[in-house]
Each structure stands twice: as C-alpha cells, then as structure tokens.
Amino acid sequence: MKLSNYQYDVLMQRFDNKRMHARYELDKRIAEVYEKLPEIKEIDSCIASVSVNAGKSALMGDDSALLKLNENIKQLSDEKKRLLTENGYTPDYLEEHFECPKCKDTGFIGNEPCECFKVAETELILESSNIKDVLSKENFATFNAELYSNELEDYDKELQCTPYKNILSVYEKVKAFTQDFDKEHKNLLIYGSTGLGKTFLTNCIANEVLRSKHTVMYYTTFSLFDMLSKYIRSDNDYKEQSSYRDSVITCELLIIDDLGSEMSNTFTETQLYSIINERLLKGLSTVISSNLSPKNLHDRYGDRIFSRFMKDYDFIKLIGSDIRTKL
Image (cartoon, rainbow, N blue to C red; front, side, top):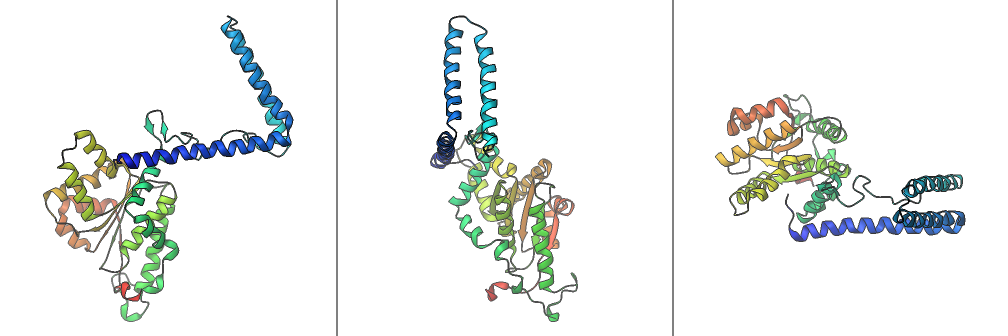
C-alpha cells in the first residue's frame, strides 16, 4: 500500500531510531571494553593514527601507503579480535549490531526497499487500521475449542465428526499452514455458517505470519473492492494506481475475509479473478473465508474463479452452531 507522507515520515523515524539505538549500544560496549582492556583502546588509537599517516602519504604521492595501511589495519584488527575472544567476548563485540544486517537498519538496499521495510510498512498499516488490537485478542493463544459442541446430536455425517472434533482438526491445519509458511506455498478457503469462528481463525493466521516477519495484508471483501474501486477511478496517476494495487498482489500473505458479502458485479468478479490468478502465478499465499458453501461459491462466481479454488486451495469447513452465544 502506498503510504501517506505522514506515515512514511513515521516509518523512516523508526528506522532512524533503530540506528541510533544500535550506535548507543555500541558506545556502551566500547566504554565497557576500554575500561576492562585498555590495550584495545590503544589498538583503536593506533588504527586511527596509521590511517591518518597513510592518508597524508598517499596525498604526497606514495602509492604504496594505502596497501601498507590495509596490511597494518588487518594485523591490528586480528590482535583486537584475539584479545576480545581471550577475554570472553565475541569477535564482533565492538561492531554495530543491527536488527537487519542486510540494510543496516536503513530500510533500503540501494534504491530498493529491504524486506524489513516491507514488514514495517505492513505493521504500520495494521496499526492505522486498528487490526493490531484485534490480533492481540484473537490468536492461537486465545483459541478455545470448548466453545464447540461434542454432543452426538451435533454429529456431522458428511465430515463424520462432532463440531468439537472438527475444530481440533481445523486448528491443526491452520497452525501447520503458519508453521510451514516459509517452506511451501499453500492457499486456504475457510467456509461455514455465520458465527463459527472463521474470522477468528484468519486473525490467528495473520498474527502468526506477521510474527514470523512476513508481509500480511488483511481486508474484508467489501473493503478490498471498495478501495480498489475508489483508487482506480480516482484522479491519481497510473504509477500511483499500480503501486496501490501491487501491494495487494505482492504481499506475502493476503487475507480476504467474508467473501460473498460484497455487491457482486463485473468489476468485483474481474478484480477477484485477477488478484487470485496473479498471486497464484507469483507463488504467494492467500487465505479466504466465506459463509458460502462450495456450491454457492460456484454459482456466484462461475467456473473461471471456482476452478482456481478447486485446483489451488485447501477447503476447510467449519460446522456447528453459532459460538458467539457462548462467549
């Protein structure tokens, strides 16, 4: 998603703070080591001195000065690391430790956003949409299978189990989806009647995948198509339109909640097919929840979309009665 100027400034300030913290922690480690091992302080002073002298010599035309400098610094650095390890420190103890070594907490590698920037961007968007508060309450830690009936009278002949037994199986499937997210590309379609916990499960998935530092975009079906419609029909230029839509196509996990609640028309069906198809081609995971049965999904969206679901999605059915009356 394209950030507003304010959101971008907030994000960059967070990266500035990370670098400042890394420098602060390094200064603390330097002060600690200098007090315990004064000889390392002398080595650092020597490195600074030989660097200045080599620079002066190079300016005077001594081409060998920089080569000698590299040799001298290597010898001094090796001695420094030896002293550190002999005294119980790691060899890199006096180097800056960044949260993201790839970009050194700048958020960018060259001119391209680092993966950590994309994750931070997603988290900021979630904060702005207040979904982060929801995820703190609806996650695997707060999952409660006891809300589902285990009575024989509620036994489902199609699945051959009670709602309680079924939800335990569903829990294991969605948990495995998050645990294997880095290893394999899967898509889920969670369906069942109203009030069976579909949104709760998608929130569990979103929370777990976010915690593993992946980009997640979460939309109700209505909000997704509403945003796409407003943005595509707005006066924004083509580049901005592409950037906005690309965030939906390229995030590592897209969650579409309550498919079927939107006003169905040519625009929504075209956008849905395009999003699903492009993400499949890119090997990116999508999780969809719906109150509609597979038959109703087919009737509503037709062969073109439903065939994608059948071929590339794992269907997960929830059964039972509305658990919200038990909360």
